[in-house]
Length: 146
Image (cartoon, rainbow, N blue to C red):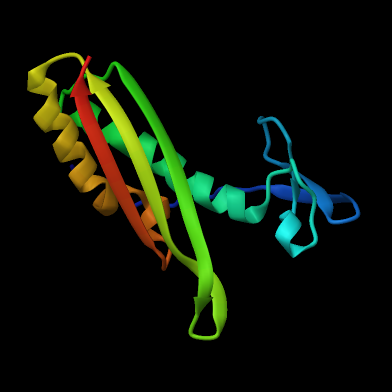
C-alpha cells in the first residue's frame, strides 16, 4: 500500500474569548470552545489541549483502521473505542508518557476477524498522528463477530 509523496497543509485559528478560554476554528467545520483543564487553572466542561491530544490519537486510530480494513476488503458492523492518556513527570518534564486506546470492533463474519486483526496490527505504521508523537500509543483491540 504505497502512497505518493505529497504535502498536505492543515490550518486552524484560535481566538481568545476571555479568562482561560478560546474558540478554535477550522474553515468549513464547527468551532470548538477550548480552555486549559481545571487542574491547570482552567474551566470544566470545555475541551482542553490534553483532551484534543488524546482524541487526535483515538480518531486517527479509528480512521486508519477503517482505511486499512477497506484495503484488506474486510467488513465492519460496529466500532467503539475509549482512550486514556497518562501525563506524568518524566525526566523533569510533565509529558504524556502513553496513550492507551481500547477498541471494541464487531465484524459480520469469521472471515473478517483476521482482516480486522491485520488492520489493527498495521495502525502504528500508518497512523499519521501516532507516528508524529513521542509518547507510546498502545491499541488494545477486541474483535468479535456480530
